Image 1 (cartoon, rainbow, N blue to C red):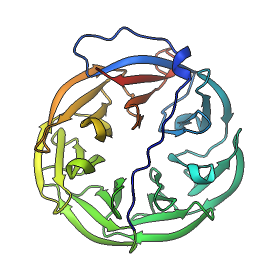
Image 2: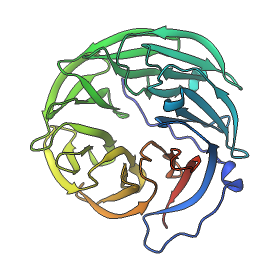
Image 3: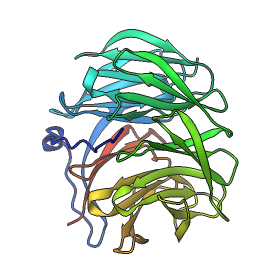
Image 4: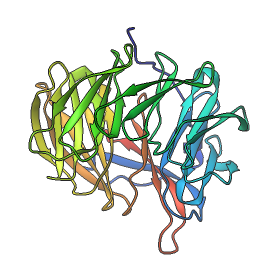
Length: 331
């Protein structure tokens, strides 16, 4: 099956009402707005966007709550309470459903405007972040020690598993093909799996790097990019053969990698309170072009491919309310 990247044009009306900032000269990103969330206990560990209905979903994992932001006015329009230690979320736009992984081994399912509960899906322990594949209308997530679960969003059910020979860590799905790349927790390798055949097909060594903390794909350059804590940095691998092609230093507490493929940019959220920015050159290598200050502990983010805008979840701390900060590419 050949998958093609879906391009959707959106207008984020909430930015018109957000607080605007004066960009600093030379910054790789400009802070363009913020949306207040109020007091939120604990971490924020998931973001998803509803293009058609202009909603941003914010998974407040520490509070066991899902907040829905209406982007037309930049305000919280709905909250869903009582989620058991939520682990991640993904939206299936074709079926207008939102899937939320929970700590009790279930997937909670919601649909509509406003969100209403639908029959959930029982899986098993240790649910990882959820990843939606638009080409097949399926969701993939690690669970149960050495498996990737496949959810059929068309029929709203657990369809099949991919069995692995290692414990799944970060996961990323290929748009222009059928592969999934999975970092192996506690091991110096990345598993390669075939989503059409539902099986592991190999693994790549990460060399002198420890296990990957986060993964991103830059398919235009033929690169898989990984963030590492030991030693701190980014490394990139050739998509044809898995060979390590280069490395650059980055922050010591990496969060999420975000690939803005059309602009040749890679961003890394950092727990020490910044976003590191990298640029890809004509040879498919990356160099750091700068950083922008954020807030310590703010690592959960979402990149909108068309605009290049980044939504960063900033948790409550030291009397400061939680918020979503919005950044746009400089220039």
